[in-house]
Image 1: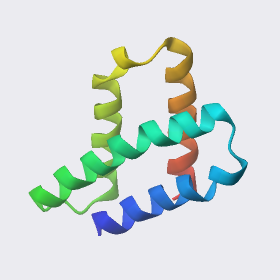
Image 2: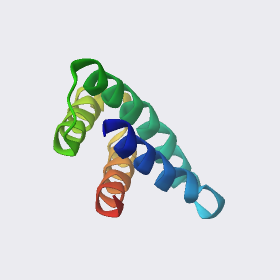
Image 3: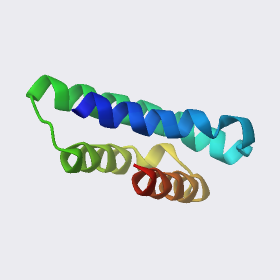
Image 4: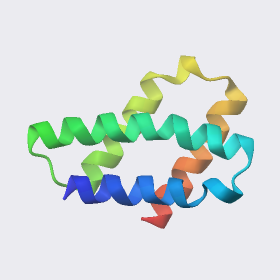
Length: 87
């Protein structure tokens, strides 16, 4: 089930590539890594709830916040909100 959620999230990112701005492409690429790592961790632990996947992705983004400038962080978080609403 987690794999299905991961695939849906990544599919939304992939479907926006053609019309995405540079900022959206950056945020999508950045989020892909966090999504895949969180999904792998959930899968390894037998976790199947989307809410747990979502919480792990958000925790991962929070832990890595020093990687992003404040402006980039806003862009990433806006895309994350769009993704969660699309799935």
